[in-house]
Length: 291
Image 1 (cartoon, one colour):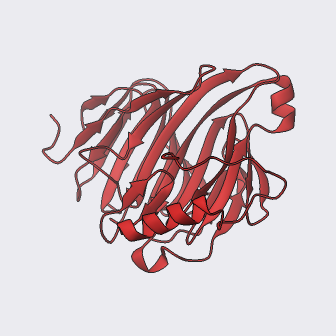
Image 2 (image 1 turned 180 degrees about the vertical axis):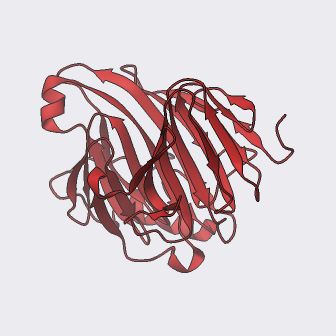
């Protein structure tokens, strides 16, 4: 039986063509955020033939930090700060939008030429009220720099924040929990209540949480303040996310996150007037959805 405050979230599916499916988990009508996580997309796996790939044209963000985490494939990130970085499985690209940034996400030339399978998760973390308009920045963290440990058949990698006595080198803006967990068949793990809000998203495999079976591609938001037992019947890949709740609700409109409608409206006007800046070497852009 689920605890009264537990919640299972089934994602909404978006087919972007070429077999590229995105599962939107957060925001959800009954749960807008988990800790600082205000947006959670699971994309792929998708197979791109030679000559084809992902092309997300330059677009703006405010008031959030984005993190892309891959299981397969590669994505080239370019932004208005001049960053140009390819991310591969296990790496972290952490972009703090703050007062405003523009970026594009595309399949790198080598993978586009040969074809690739792309599979990963993109999340947005809302920034604290006092940091919503900080200067934008971007940092890349190679997989080898992230702390890992294996305990009783469970390998955990701390993507961001703190967990299981480890701390990621990624600079977060509020207490954060973000962990890649891989279970051998029959392995079990206790998730302590170190962070106020916690959720488990199952990428694949058979996983039970406090005796409740979680279907693949679903998120289980667990109750606060108690240990949670995770048991894998098969090999499992899962993401654990959460942290301290944000200091108030956030409004999400398109790619903008803010605590007020007026800030969203200002961002819309700035993008329409092209006051955000440009990604060097790129002339395309994604217009506002209502234009």
